[in-house]
Length: 560
Image (cartoon, rainbow, N blue to C red; front, side, top):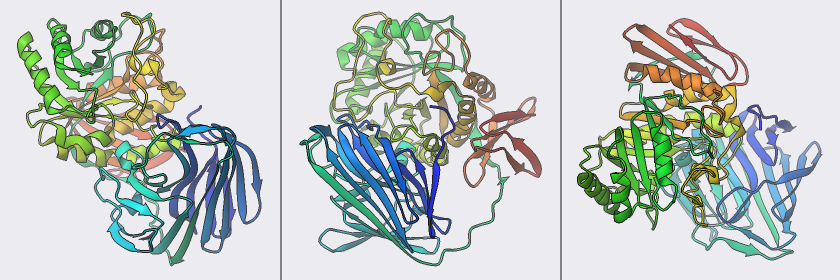
C-alpha cells in the first residue's frame, strides 16, 4: 500500500461522493458534508476488518452498485440519489457458515457535528433529544436507533436505518475523525454465526432539507498559540526478530513493554537497554510475584519511569489500584526510586472509560495512539491529526495534574485491545521470533514512506499541550521501526532526530483550518526554529505571522 490512494468520484444531481474501494466516502450535497462515510463492514472474532473485494462496479446517472465478495459473503452495496434523498442498500448472502462479530452497514458522521442537537428515533416511534458529544464520550451516546435527525450548516438531515437495531459510538476515542452509527448492538453476544444461505439486508436513507450556510472563504493563515514546551521524544523498543543491527540511539529514552508471562521478557529488556538510554518500562500481565522478578531485573539500568498493567480481568488494559500497589511494593523491595506511572496500555478509549480504576497516587498517566485501528486508509491517518489535540487536552484533564506520557504512537495497534483470542507470546526465551507486535498483523507498508516523517512532525504538534510530558514513537528498528532490520534509516528517523533536539523548549503551535498543515515555532537558546508539515496531496503555501511558507506535498521543512 502506497501513501497516496486513488478514489473515483461519483456525482448524481446535487449529491457527490468518492468511491474508495468498498467505501462510500465524503457524501456531500451541494458541496456540504452530510456524512463522512457509509460502508459495509464484516468483522472477525477479534474485531479485525475482513477485506471485501469489489468484483464489479455498475454506474448509472442515479445509482452506483458495488458487487462485493470476501470472508464468505457475496452481494451488493448500492447507492441511489434522487433530489435531496440518498439511499444506501447492502444486500449480501453468506456463501458458507460465517463467524463474525458484526456484519452490516456502518455510517460515519463528520466531527464538525460535535455539540449539535440530535434527535434519536427509537424502533417504537418515541424520540429522544440529546446532542452529539462535545467532549469525547467514553461510552455510546445513543442506543436503540431506528433514525436520527440533526442540523449542520443550515441543513436539516434526517437519517433512517433498517435491517437491524443500531447504536452510536464516539470514534474520536480511537483518533478517528467521526461518530459511528452501527449495528449490531454490543450488548448482544459475539462472535455469532451465520448459517450458509443467510441473507443480510440493511438500508440507510438520508433526507436533507433547508438551505446551506455559505462556505467560509479558504484561508491558509496559520495562527500560532502558546502550547507549553516541546515534549520529550522517545522511541519504542524494537520487537522484530533477531538479528539486531548495531544500536543507533534516537530520542532521549526507549519505551519497552515487557509481558511477564512471556519466556522472552528478559531478552526484550536486554535489547531495549542496548541503546544506553533511560528506559520507560511497562510491565504487562503483572501479578505481584512476577512484578518482583521484573522490577528486580531493572536494578542496574537507567530508568525514567516504570508502569504496570494487570493484563487480565475487566480492567486488563489499565493500571488498577491493586497492580500499582504491587508495583510500588516491588520498587521499594528493589530499592528503586523511580516514578510509578499508569494509565492505559492501549487507546485513549480505555483511559477515558477506565480512569476511575486508576489510583490517586500515580506519578504519571499514559495511553497509546493508533490511528489505523478501524481503517487502514491513508485518509484515516491524515484525518486523525485534527482529533489529537482534543485527545491530548482531555487526557491532561483526566490526569489530575500529573504528567501525561503518550505512547507508543504506532500506525497499527501494538496490541489488540478487543481480541477475544489470547494474546500471542514467543515460544522461546530468545528473540528469534520477535515478540509483541511482531506476532500480530501490526506492520504497515507506509512505515518507510517519506510522508510518515511529515505526519510525525504534525502529530507531535497536535499532541503538544501543557501537561503532555513525553511522546514515544514507533520502534528503534524493524518493520515497525524508524530504521530497517539492516539498520538503514527510514525518512521518519530524520524528523525524530530534529524533534529530539527541540524537546523542553517553549513552543507555539498552529494549523490550517483543514488540519493538513501544521506549524511549530520553538524558542531555542540559539534563536527561533520553525517546523512545518504538509499532509495534503498538493504543495501548500501558508502565512505564518506575515511570512509565507511553501511546503511540498507530503513533506516537512525546518526554518531558522
